[in-house]
Image (cartoon, rainbow, N blue to C red; front, side):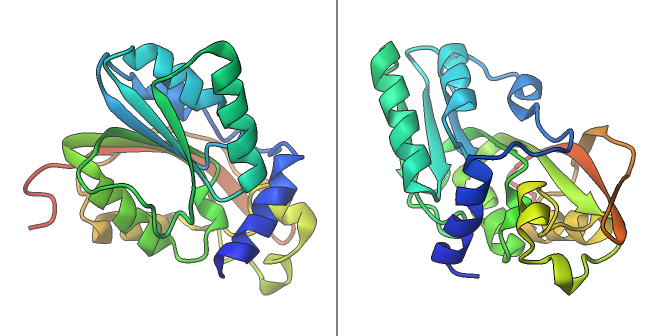
Length: 213
């Protein structure tokens, strides 16, 4: 899936609310003063602005979203309320134009399941984190591979499960990116969706100098 196709999916999500209980990464991330944070799939910027307050003037928060409209809205909101320690970036999550080893914390809420090449996204997360940096990601996984008929179904996309993968595949991708000792902070009971079931979870791990060795 190319950037334009992903943008089309996000455009649907811009006006719909995910019906699954996926989210809360910012609340669970425990951002600290002076940290540099990144929100992947930052949307209207709500979590970015929250993190900006938590890290204070000595910290900085980047919001990354593929949808130009969302970045424009988020940038406008930050300017209106006078938040200066933020920057919103239009980018494909598979190739993020930020320098390596920049972030103390990366969060995301119900976004990564929409990207087709999840391995590349997780490689980017590993690249962007400093040694000792952490991610807190809330997302969706499926009980079985999602049937092809739902891949481009507008309802399934808006409900945040069309691009989901199984839990085993999801965890394998995280491990292959270089993370090892991750923790599942929260996991929901399965929801019936179409011909399968899906669940939401929030997962966290720390990047360390031995993670990739």
